Length: 304
Picture 1 (cartoon, rainbow, N blue to C red):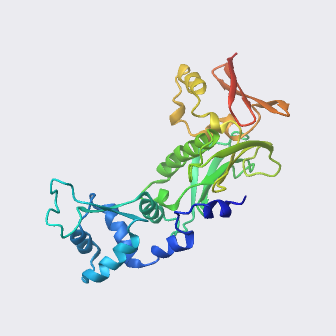
Picture 2 (picture 1 turned 120 degrees about the vertical axis):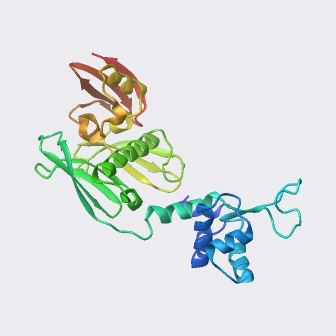
């Protein structure tokens, strides 16, 4: 069954084309943005004033189009809270769908297409030269200008560039990459929360610069991510404890500084059918050996 068929199975759902048509009007987008700014719930009169529409009937028409799908009407309480006269409900507030629309606008995904280059004062894990980052088409990529080794390229909304220095952008990108891939490895799609499946593949020509990669694909929305096989271990308790024992705060160490997150020289394939893979994580002459299976579930850890 295709994803389109799955969408149409829901009898109570609004068709995607109709849902997007509801927010194609400038006044309706202004209503959603106003509800985002103001404290919930917002009275009709206050909301109309905030949006700046003088005609009450016209404003009511647009608000009604959004209500139930993107906006929720909050009725007055039985004790007469705010609307005892019955002239209007206690107010209006955003539903989750309305929040998603405003978040997408603020993220810049629909309206912004910036490009940016950032120098990174960190060495390439392969040759030791300084890394560089480039931003284009909502993707931030890190690689080595000298040897060409890739250190990953991952989605990053344009809003992440707003009011941030280069260093702050890199810090935010690092945290986002950790979040995305640890969620994906745990089977949760970071876009729609659907079921995410993980498989191991021979990389071939790949932006990661590795010969082996983990592919994460959502069954529901088909969102896809790929990574070096070690990247999903950044939140594993044994790995975090290992670095902590060596006085290294793993959460504050950019993933591109960690060889096991950006290349596969520390990766050993023990079996291929089914996959059994060992990642050797070394620090101060001690090594943590982490063994994972074909969906990156940890099956064993050992310090040597």
